Length: 79
Image (cartoon, rainbow, N blue to C red):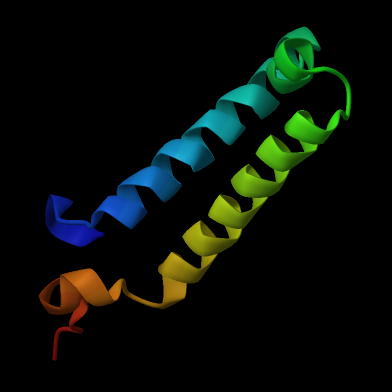
């Protein structure tokens, strides 16, 4: 995702990771879990949202070491 070029999946993953980070920021600073407040404390919909954001976080971690196949030219190492 260097050079501002990324595919739709990378954009969605980045958005979900950002939403997850904002939720954790709210938990840490204000002790407000926005997902739990909107969907209920550990209800099935809340667990699905937590799971989706967790998978997005894993994909974001993978993107640190492996380049997205959609942006094949942007991840070449310099010699």
